Image (tube, rainbow, N blue to C red):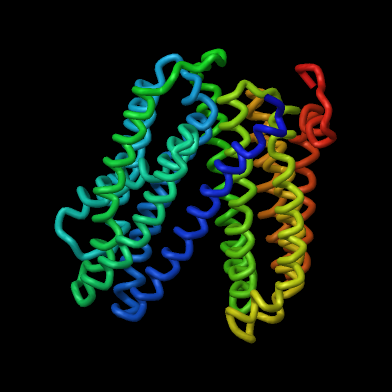
Length: 407
């Protein structure tokens, strides 16, 4: 069967993952809108900051193993053992960091045994953050959708049910995790227990691979959080508000390039594709995403109008960020190619360059209150990352050709 005939396989993996991600984001937004109406600003602020800390810890704990499982789990010599070792390590890491937060009383949440609650919540969220990688690598996209959307709906309903209770926000957020996490773990374990042995060569997890992916996870978080932080610290006031709104839309859009990259890696691993074949298998999606960025550029005034007339001045930045998104689509393809070739430090290096370029450019631009400067910095950083991470195999795949290994 030719690559073209197989192309739908990647689309069936990519499409549901993107839908699940966007649906969960919308439900998350609705959760905080309802919370703001049911609780005081102080309750929302204190609980929200605690949840942000816990989810940040979990994301950091899962970050290094997320990409590892995407690439290795389907073809590991002992996949069930890898699943449980990786899950235990992630949850243990999350619990340890959560314990530090709890012992130091970094959360102002008024609850007894806070030092125990925070690490427990961080541990559970760590697995929840890892589950997308596990389910995507196993092609369990239906479960992926149900877990993300189910969690979003459950916490929203519980929030309404708990309205008026002091710990209603925290309870509504935490309780669904106690159901979702064990169910996902059971589904993943049973899928691996009944899986047909793959014909692909088995892969092992190496410390070098894990370290590279943890570094990559760190610089990604640095780039996402760095720009709004820099805008606030350097320029402050209205300028940071304009930047934050645009940056939130950009990072949400950029997640689709990450999902495309992840889907390419999983499909290539499962079917033993080299980079040119993997790129050919997914290249029909690329023009659609790039065209989407062009549509978003045209609709940018409408997008900003949703936030209010005060944000109209951010139009140049919004449009430049959508240009950057089009470049990031190709970056996602390049990063997938490097992971398929097991060039993990090339991935980390490219992402590091992007992070430094974006945050460094934001610092310079914020000093002169230049929204255009931030947009240009992101475009230049994304372009440089593309140059550093693109391979001959990627170029050949985009052209529909083959290239000898090692390109």
